[in-house]
Image (cartoon, rainbow, N blue to C red; front, side, top):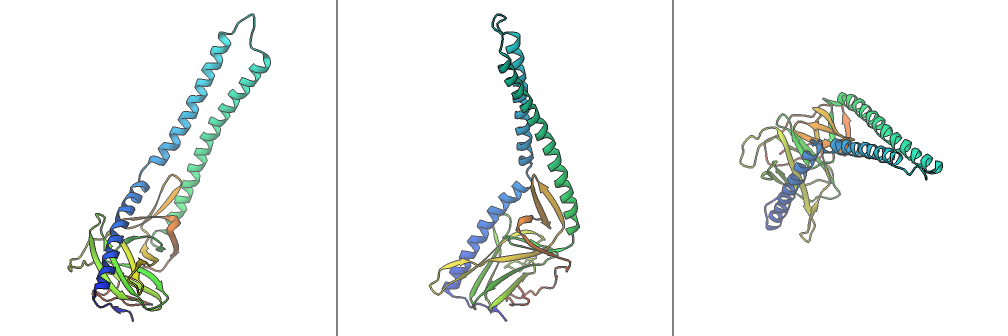
Length: 267
């Protein structure tokens, strides 16, 4: 079983590094969530189509003006006229194609989103630094090839570190669960938090430990061509979700400060 790491100057440095990393994750995730709920991609697509339509109308105006004001003694050659009509038809076709393509993409995305709604209630495992706290429970899984010092830091959306843990991992799979209590013992509300997991080598150099988070899907949304999975207040890009399962996330946690290794853990 993984044990709580003893406090030392090296562990303090590792924990400080993890705290900084979780604060950085908070900034990145806040920006990503803002982009996920922003309608800018759709607006950009609409503006592009409007621009093409405007160019089409301008072309039509120029062509008719040219025909109205041509020199009767030297009218436009049939070759030039035919060429400009071909350009006219080409632009018109582009407008129609873009309109139809936009409609088709929208229908496809709506259908995909409706299908993805069947994921609500399932347990999702995702590679993300967003940590969904649901029903006062969240969990993080990671692997280490040797027993190693591990520092975990959790920060809120403002970048304030609310929970830290110092552990020694076991070889192989490890799972750390959090019951939503802060370092001061206060019970925090469910929501989206940010987490960093770090370790250090024998020289004291710190580096990130790859990890996944687990949560229950509460909704599916999309913005443009991107599909997002909601786990409570956490909004995670579908491309970062590794798997779904019917098994519910366990809500059983321990309030101690030690973390257990594979197959379970506590915070």
